[in-house]
Image (tube, rainbow over the protein chains, first blue to last red):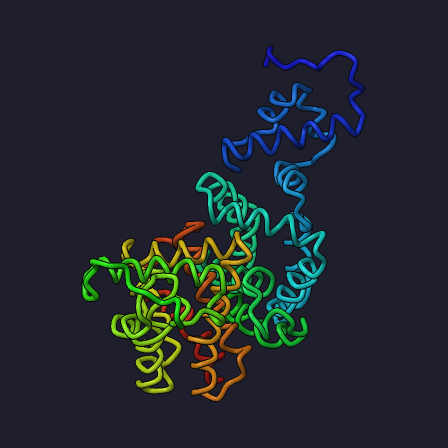
Length: 194
Length: 194
């Protein structure tokens, strides 16, 4: 694309460049959604070379995760989830989600994304495309279970996070994580392998 | 309370009075939460006699349901849910929730309440108090199961509604209701009786 240019006087390796790519990524993801956003389009928005975007972020998924400050990159999370024994996958999933949402620093950016998906149609579309294509369908296809079953598991996890951290239902909000693993793990297990 | 007075020239039975009580109720519920709001306080806010509030709305729950335009009154819903065979309670609950959320007219006020609970701490507190005291704990105590189990079932239902109608995940958004009853019913059944 002939319109791509670097701004003069900026070093390609600076923290500033990375930050500007992320700002551009947030804008492009919000406008185009996850599916239609491209590395090339984000590079153009940031006025940098696409190769530089690839240098910082391996994939579009990786860029989304960094732009939204999500604590989990599906490209690492999905293999990890599928790696262990298949009969524990439900408990492992619940334990992982509770682990990454335990600290406010990692939880808040996730909640911000979920909140905006609840209240803004454009943000909902972006979130929907990301969660289905980068996460749910990946896991469903590897496990060879229908997509609907992964979405049922997602619904259970989503409701748990919202009930625990946003609506703050008691006793859910202060329940021991392992109690929730024991209660919700079999549900997720049934959806994923039952 | 000596400060309670009727505005002159308004008939106690008019539609207008009912509407003004509901407006007052929304204000008082938002400010005080569900637990601390009282019929007396709402009557004072609406400048009508508390007896008139009772005439229109049997209970505080009923007034909340009317004020928020919710399609389900827990005082009718809870007995209905508990009435049928205990071994079908999971399927019955999922089917009922899908039934009342099928039409946009009944779904939208519910979603409005959920959205505001997601984004506003005061609305979250109001929703939390209502859902726990008027619904979840009622069912849990009648079934003699721990409150946490009802909240796990709520999380599953909440996530399903959000995934289906707000995030609009496919295939969840267009799934046949009976397919969802078959998939999610056993989960709710296990939480409630398992």
